[in-house]
Length: 145
Image 1 (cartoon, rainbow, N blue to C red):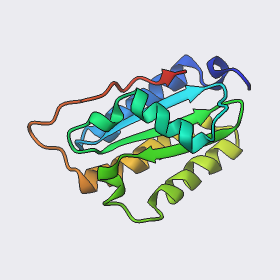
Image 2 (cartoon, helix red, strand yellow; image 1 turned 30 degrees about the horizontal axis):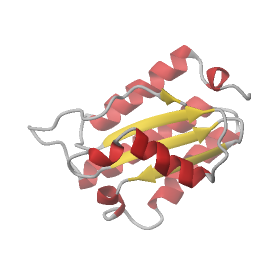
Image 3 (spheres, rainbow, N blue to C red; image 1 turned 180 degrees about the horizontal axis):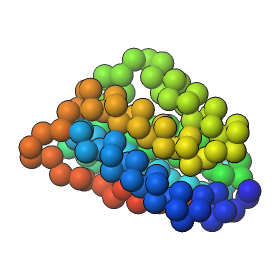
Image 4 (spheres, one colour; image 1 turned 90 degrees about the vertical axis):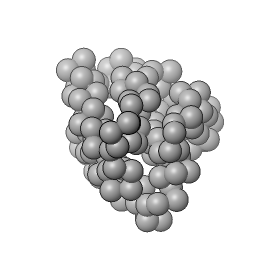
């Protein structure tokens, strides 16, 4: 699968958007998924660039999380903003990455993303619980580059 369009079906995309909605309903945190065919940059550097292009660094509590996937390169990165990175355990993103990678190895990309989103949402909920004045600051739709 080298095309971004072939990575997920429309139904799978909607299931991922729904997982983001569910994960965010109990937190002020924000989660995004970004897919692109390939990158000429180191995947983490590109993820940070996309994080900033999507203006995820502008959330009120600096608690955005990006799941970035370079489809053809078979690379993915979880990029958290400084607010969440200061609160989660040092190995948190590695354990979340392992959950995603296990599904990806079996070709179940949708479930890998869903499980990663829900795991990130649990940490966001723990460290950034929903407040009455919270608003959904970022789109839940999957971005494609």
